[in-house]
Image 1 (cartoon, rainbow over the protein chains, first blue to last red):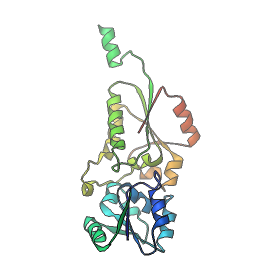
Image 2 (cartoon, rainbow over the protein chains, first blue to last red):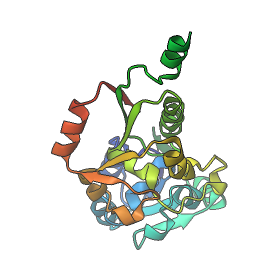
Image 3 (cartoon, rainbow over the protein chains, first blue to last red):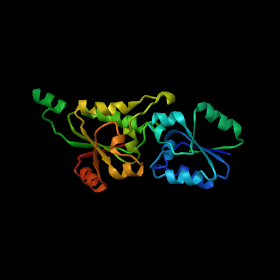
Image 4 (cartoon, rainbow over the protein chains, first blue to last red):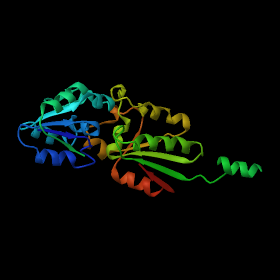
Length: 99
Length: 132
């Protein structure tokens, strides 16, 4: 299953809820303001690092670039472009967007 | 007539302390850009303007943005032009930077870093506070 989160983890609880309810082996793709969560030194970094034991964490590269965050991405997070986004959606049977 | 012109231009009119509080990340919503536009408009009225960046608002000032990939305007460079409009009072809340692993060196403009109590005092002395 693919989970997509687009809200900042320091403004909404979408990411927290997603990580709590995502089943083992699922993919989580962070886009738009959610990409701040995978950057070093932030309060969400520990949550992301803990989640990587059970989940595949992806972040959308163009959104990281736009926010000046590309050089700060946590180890283990896979950065994808729009083509990678499409591949993730195409590979999964179910997709949940945590709006 | 000249008195009226002065009032209209704020020349000898009342100068109020305006604070614009920015608490949203750029790009994901329109708040950050709209807030900046309003600040630029306010510059035309010769008021005493302060800008505050707190919570996700500190992300508005990050260096090195490249918005080509998401095809939106990179307005972060506009913050650098603010001193040309005599808007030089930029304040960032320290706790907000700390929570995001950021320091002053990560920001595109010179700012004054305040702790939460100092921010509270600054806010309390304003005539008008506008929040984005």
